[in-house]
Length: 333
Ligand code: HEC
Ligand code: HEC
Image (tube, rainbow, N blue to C red; front, side):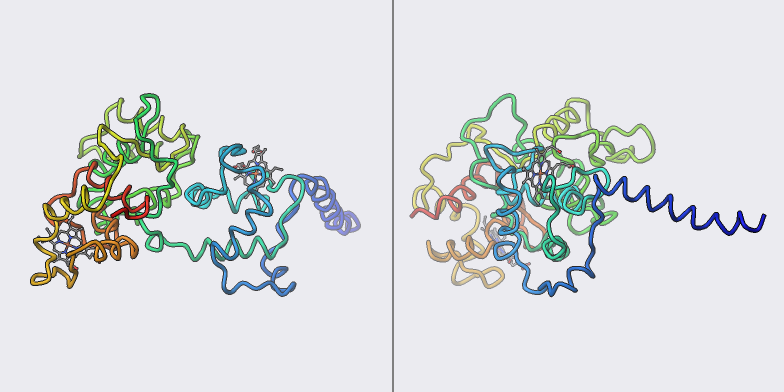
C-alpha cells in the first residue's frame, strides 16, 4: 500500500511533464520578464516611434498593413494598434496566450521585445492621445457611403447623447471608470472587439436582457435601429471614420473659412483685451499654435482634460470637421 502512495507523486509529475511536452508545440510558454531582465533588456526609454513601431515593422507590418490587414489588423495604423491594445489581442498573440493565434506565426518574439511592448502598453493613457491626432487621413471621406456606418457622424453622437451624459459616462462622472466621450476613450474601455460585435462586451450591454443593460432602464434605451447601427459599425472594424455629411470641406482656408468662424464663436472671449483663460485668438499664428499643441481640437471636441469651447454649446459637426480638416491639411492660410 505504502509503495503505491510513494509512486503516485512521481507518476503525477511525469504525466504533467508529458502533457506539457504535447502542448508546447502549439503554445510555447511565455518566457516572462525575468528572462528579459536576464538578457539585459532595456525597459527604460520605451516610446512608440523609437521602439514599438520598429518592432512592429520588423515583425508584424509585413502581414498586417493597409493593403492586407491579416485578421483585420493593420499595425501601420496607430488607431488600429490602440484597438489591438484595448481588446487584448496584441499582448495575447505575442505572449501566445490561450484564445489568441500565436504571433508572429511560427516564431515567438524574444522576451525583450515582448516586455518592451508590455511596458509601452502600461505607459499609455487616454490623456496622452491628442484628440486631433487620432483620425488618420484616409478615414475621412468626402462623400458618405450609404453602406458604411461612420463613427464621427453617427456612432459618437449616439453614444454621447445616450451614454456620456452627466451622472453617467461623461468625463466628470465616469461611472465604473468608464468614459464614453470620444473615440480613444471608447476604444480604451477594452470592451469593443473590431469585427466581432458578439464578442464585444460593449455591444452585449446594449442588448442584454438582464440587469446589466445599458443605458439603464430608468433612461431611454437605444432602439433596434440604433443598436443595429452600432453592430454594423463594429462589424466594419470599429474605425474612427467620418464622412462629409453635406458639409463642404474642399478648399478650407484660414481667411475664407476658419477666421470667420472664429469671429462668430470665439474671438469675443479671446481678444487681447479679454483673453479667456489667458488665451488670445487674434490671428493666424495664434490659432496655428493652438492647433499644434492640441488645445484647439481638444476644446472644441469637448475632450477630457480640456476646457469645453465654446462654453455654451458645441460647434456643429460640420464646423468641427472644417477645423479638423484645416489642421490635418497643414493650416492653409
Ligand atoms: C507571416 C505573416 C504574419 C506575421 C509576420 C504576423 N501575423 Fe498576425 N496574423 C497573420 C494572419 C494570417 C492572421 C489571421 C489568421 C489567424 O488569426 O491566425 C493573423 C492574425 C493576427 C491577430 C488576430 C488573431 C487573434 O487571435 O486575435 C493579431 C492580433 C495579430 N495577428 C497580431 C500580430 C502581431 C502583433 C504580429 C507581430 C508581432 C503579427 N501578428 C505578425 C499573419 C501574420
Ligand atoms: C463665453 C466665453 C468663451 C467663448 C465663447 C470661447 N471661449 Fe475659449 N475660453 C474661455 C475661458 C474663460 C477659458 C479658460 C477656461 C478654463 O480654463 O476653465 C477658455 C479657454 C480656451 C482654451 C484653452 C483650453 C484648455 O483647456 O487649455 C482654448 C483652446 C479655447 N478657449 C478656445 C476657444 C475656441 C476655439 C472658441 C470658439 C470655438 C472659444 N474658445 C470660445 C472663454 C470662452
